[in-house]
Image (cartoon, rainbow, N blue to C red; front, side, top):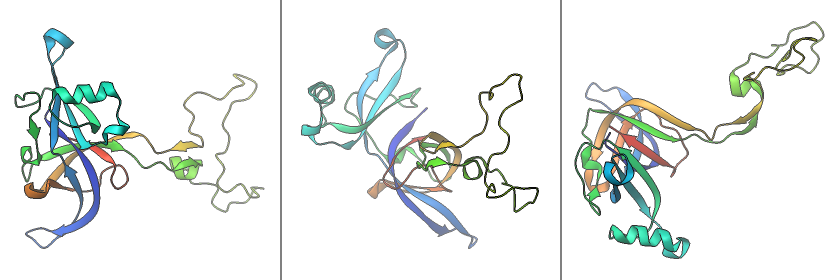
Length: 205
């Protein structure tokens, strides 16, 4: 599956040929350098390792610097492997946003915004008591009953409760490519993608 590493720039909206306002996300997609070529003979599988976004050498380990030196490039902040790449590439090759075309559909994967410790109303969409009576004093956003009685005397695993929300790997599928701005390495896709501004995302065809 071909793809690129990118960075979320932010959201905007554009008008289509029918005058409809479409919300979209702008992604800085590549250029990415092929930093390693995995082969079945050596690694047991075939894949391309791509690197994106230059990193300061003093913040890199010597092992990483040696790895990127083989590809003839500087150290990279983000490295991702893509299996079953559509085109054959060599070590050190540059892959840019031109692999995408307007009108095709892509999948975008990123880490969603972290929202900290949240209750069941925000995290799972519970309705709360809703100003009901029957003695529910200051319990309007409480989860309600969570466990059984004397048997089994425990809370079942997987129960929807309060806890850490966000900060998870999320993939949004079938987003239509609205524009490809090759000279600025920009990709405009319909809809929203996970993550905050300037977060790294993986775009797959």
